[in-house]
Amino acid sequence: MPSRQDAQAVEHSEPAVQRRRLRVLFLATRDYYHPETTGGDVTLWENARYLALRGHAVTYLTAGYGRASRGETLDGINVVRLGGIRSLWIRTFIYYIARGRNRYDVVVTEGFGGSRIPRMAPLYVREPIITEWHQIHRELFAAQYPVFLTWPLNLLERLAARVHRDTFVRAGTDEWKRAFPAIGFRPENIFEVPVSIRPDWLAEPKGIPAEPPTIVWIGKFRRYKCAHHAIQAMSRLVPQVRQARLIIVGRHDDRAYERELVELATRLGVQPNLEFRFDVDEVSKRNLLRSATLVTVTSGPMRCCGSLRTLTSAVACRRMRFNLHAASVGRMLDSALRKWF
Image 1 (cartoon, rainbow, N blue to C red):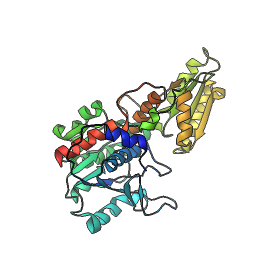
Image 2 (tube, rainbow, N blue to C red; image 1 turned 135 degrees about the vertical axis):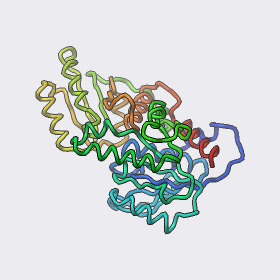
Image 3 (cartoon, one colour; image 1 turned 90 degrees about the vertical axis):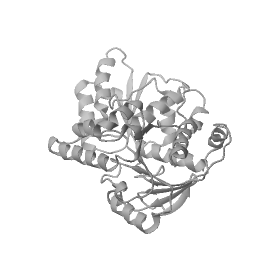
Image 4 (tube, rainbow, N blue to C red; image 1 turned 45 degrees about the horizontal axis):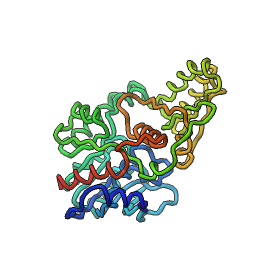
């Protein structure tokens, strides 16, 4: 359920106005409580959670997992789980045709990336659409996949972007807002809503750096996240700061890449200064960020949602306050909905 801090943030965020209660359908990949949730998933969930907190009726179509219920209410959101991630594209279509048509005021959909096979929702959804497009994937594809796969993947992304070109498109940064027209989106339809963190991150005591000096890297163990750059940097740092250590935190996404990281650390002589931590819960992750001497992000100049969330969380833990908490970000999305719908 939404926290007391959330409710207070909403209460004081803007003057009371006459509000229209919107029916909002989210087409997502994973919900916040999915064991394999990513930064993009959390961003979409936080936007949905804030809208529910503001009194909108929010339904969240997403993938199932394990013994999770097919339908339940979480954080004020009506969650509907449809099965495996790779079949979401067809399951979403069937659900919408059977139960969704003419029942919502606006649909918020992931456009590309999360659900593996794009839903192409504008081909059948008749309500106004906001598209969640995390990033342009060209550099990601080049880093992660063999050359013979990159050109069809780039073509698929451009095709999906063309399908969504007449929708409203959320960009997470000003850089992505300026970049998205290059793959076919209409510039006038792109709006910026940055990632957010929950207010309780700012309610905790200021973090204190640990001894010895500790560098923390958090992300998916995939080649495009470039964790190897952090290990390469350690090879220059360790001769000067012998006790420095690097903690790499994530899940087992790519075992081959994990082995490459270990081999790289051994070859560079920094294996004793390196520690891997897998499947770390949110509380432990927060404690790591609070005690870190340095938090490093290695995934490129125009960040994706996961990298931005790590940076935002780290700054919050060290008590550098700024305007990216959930109330501010949610207010931006809420204002956009009221403006257009």
